[in-house]
Length: 265
Image (cartoon, rainbow, N blue to C red):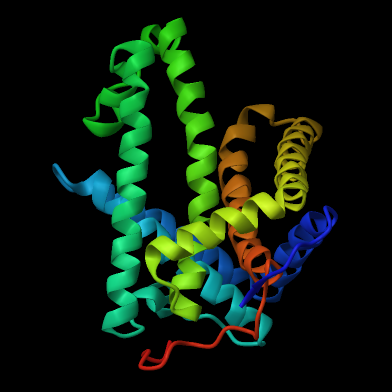
């Protein structure tokens, strides 16, 4: 497997491919994404460990959505069980994905904990312990700075885990090594990923403006928030559909196949 450096405009291509693939199987892809959101939300409600468990499952479930995209590109209808692909690929791949999930939790907790240096732990307490987010707390300059610090630190963490689940699942790369490969691939293809992110940001903004204008034109602007939520979730499912293509084009390798010993999905 060899790193493939792509031009900046590849980011635009990834967005187009994500949208095109989504509309090949719109019910399946949106349904799988909604299932993902509901599952993660319910898991996070578990007492004490719910939030950490939900974080640990993010790499594996994200891989499931990428596997669904692969199924759609092959002309198949992705079934709900495809979300569990990462956990049905044999003990070795399962253990590797669980290690990856644990590393993701560790990285996220470390980032949140570091924000305590900025605001005395208010931001960390909210995310690690829970509680209500009041307007008074949000308006505090220290809390706002802590949010920006967390966002800035999350960017490199995201780069490390961007391709890692796919490398672990489809190519058997050990977890720590997959983080290294993913980080290098993201750095080498920085401009393509930047274009990719900017285009998606513009798409989401355009969707918001379009929904607002439509509600005004039909004389019901007060219903805009109610329409905005499902529209945003649909756009988000398109975004997750496009993730597979960022991986596929970043590495010179054969099309990924299911690992030996995996159960049919």
